Image (tube, rainbow over all chains, first blue to last red; front, side, top):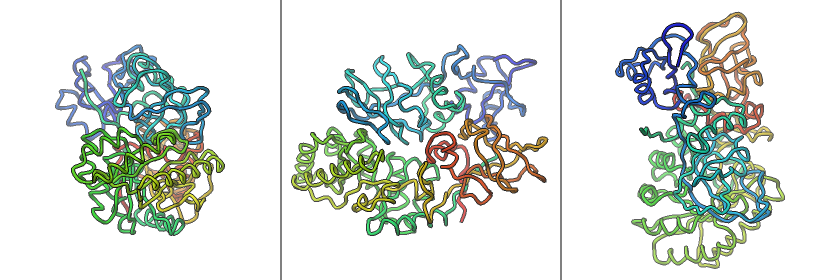
Length: 202
Length: 343
């Protein structure tokens, strides 16, 4: 991060954009940044890390989180288990409003993740998830808690992990999410991070 | 963050009463998934049972467990996510009934249940999400009957979920549902309750009500997108942000896109102010800009969405401006924003 004049101020507000203020604060510290903007409730957390909470408008911080367009590595990866699989036959439809209809027999998987978790409803029929190295499209409307993906001839079992964004072929999928939803990568990643179970990895 | 989500207990109670009167003699299964549609499941479940609601339900075990903890024996609680063995066991242990739409899951439940597991079997009537396909249903119900005779499970319900694509397609789904219930009975099962409809069909189409109607949205006062106003029902939640600064003709309010207010709403909707409706000009990360009014001062309340008392739009009206449903802007409200229960 670089500021126009003086020291950069990293934006750690809203639990570090849903990434976890403690984890991000630690990384910011290691990177040699000393000043951060945080919510009042998080001031003790960043001060314990040796950071200085400042009351100024922070610098643009997309790069800190590796959001699309910054050239950085995404800091947050959204992973979800396959709940169940079943055949979908040619002509059969999927989810509310039947907005997707299969043109040939295939296999579909129900995966966790819906607009209650920040998987925006507008993403249905617009983006895919990565599963076993392949990009599988989300078919039909995204519901509040789940969505359906077309896995084709992939050998998939319940418990297999699908990735919405943040690594591999979907590293920069938030860019496609932004295009499909009209929302910014910052608000997309923040809503997800604040609503799902979060786990810090190295 | 200068915002809070105010939940009106009396509004919630009035919505529940309107829904129950409408669907009677069918019973209400009030959906409290996802922390009661982000309203706060503890408070919502308490209001529901006080109002006499006898069934609560959630897809996520977290909300179901909270609801059961609040309701105790006063309400039956239904949870329909396909769970792993440990979570299924813990959920059953808490006295929760499980929705089962997958043959493997039925076996898993029968294996881990310490006492007879109470389940509701789900037929896929066309939505193709969770639910057993029609051609697999006879074997599935036969197996369930076998497990029931062995005392491993008790089939309390048969259920499905409709697509609401069109009345005709929903009628097809309903015919498949009726056939599935017949098949289950022929297999020796004796379900107490059948449940098919959610808010929209449950309200509008009596033949979809059966014994239980699973209603979420209307209980919270969220009408269907592009659907009619529902008499007797109004939003129970008001998202309130305080004015943090007055700049020229505009005011800044303390809620932004990182708080779950979709930035795409900027320039598209009105919010409610002490002087009535004003344009939401733009949405920033943690603050938003609203067209001002005379005498605006920091600390003034602005209603971003709610029942309309200050001229604000309902969540569904906001949602329609950006092509989605009313539930989405409510569910996006950040968990960091305090929920405040009002009378």
